[in-house]
Image (cartoon, rainbow, N blue to C red; front, side, top):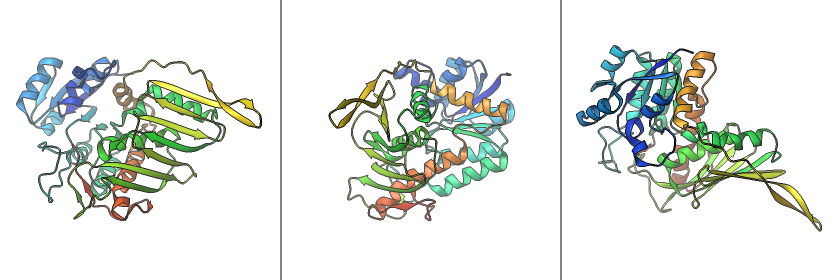
Length: 358
């Protein structure tokens, strides 16, 4: 397999420095993951801030640019990773006013696809409204761009074993999925909804019901000025239903007709229970030993998934149709809240609801 050239737009945490924070034992920033891959070569980075360009060049030995278009024209990368904040220049944690609709991920994704870059990674969430998500989907399709986003549990081998156990029928037929953790909508639940869907094979989501917190939060003018805390329910077309519980430490449980499997402690452990001990007329579910999984770099897996799709002609694991659908389900949580917690069917009729996030 040849080596593919990678360029990064946005040289902050996800682009370059997040590994310094000590959260992960394996490479997590795009730069670190690229350097660790046998199939990728880091050639350049672009950022509006000179201090970030200087630090990136010193650390990674790559060329740096202020203008991402000039970088793409000069370096001709095979893969571009959009790692900026969702809004540029980055405001605080709230939109400056009710007219603000910044969406750098959408702006850059469309521009990079239209510049003909064959592989594209975009930090989550891919867009802040469905109108902009539609623009990205259309740009990806018209340019035949391969696409993944930074919903990295989808690329985490510790969740792969949960998904494989479900596919093997070890809990029977999946009936219910529960996510445990309080979280904001665009920064956090874009991950949880994606993971719920991924674990059960990405069936189509038919309808969404949700609440923003506090429950008396009012949406005005198709504009949510800060990323809200939220809870949700999902109804899949295959009959599976999913709930989020605003407590716990990022755990996912899939309950089936013949057992359950739960990812514990943000993926660190797995608990599998199957029918076992008979107690009178009741059959108890017994814990089944599950071998620990050594984590791999999710970012490297995500980037290499793009390369594998490029080589094979197959879709990526986070291809544009599934990412667009997950984004729509996430934004539908806010739409449901606006409608008093009613079930909202997908696709959404309202495409312009904007949710600020960083």
